[in-house]
Amino acid sequence: MVALPSVALAGVLSWASGFRLYAALFIAGLLQRLHFVALPPKLEILAHTPVLAATGALLVVEFLVDKVPALDSAWDSVQTFVRVPLGALLAWGVFAHASPETQAIALLLGGALAAGTHLAKAGTRAVVNTSPEPFSNWGLSFSEDGVLLLGLWQAFKHPVVFVVLLALFVLLLVWLIPKLWRALAALKRGFQRLFGARPVRPVDK
Image 1 (cartoon, rainbow, N blue to C red):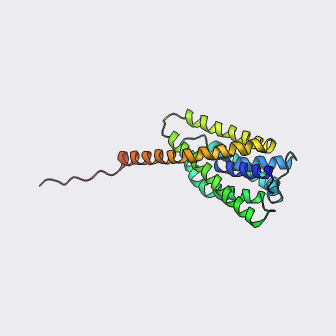
Image 2: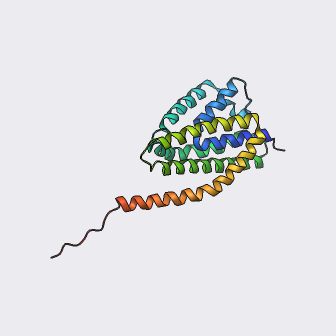
Image 3: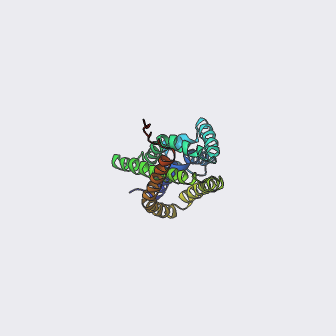
């Protein structure tokens, strides 16, 4: 039987990978290093000094980039190829000791959760970045930082609460992503009308 704390750990790491990957990796590794939590054997590498140094440096870079409108969206585009695979691998790492079937399910669900969170984060930022003022972007970014810390604390201290909240979050994603998709499609059409090539009128002879 799958233990609920393991489900919560896999869930929080995959969920966090979608919007604050390096912060989640650094914090999880640091907590393991300080013996506040015990990570599964496959994830203990996060507590090694070189890994902590790398994730800590990337955490700072992501924190700063995420506060700059437009640059944050460019960063999100690049991180698509990092967040989703690592979200899947982190979920797999939690259940690396389990049966092959459980590992496969963890890999698939972890990747799907990381992808959904990433799409929601990137799509929301793209919509917010249409505003000329930076304050909405900053407020959203700092809110994400706080949500990450709260989510990690809940997963480690109150796994039942976190799993329930995660289930509600997945329902929110199902409702939100189609709306973001339509909003982004409308933005794209607006930019095409604004910057698209105008037809060349023939010269009268």
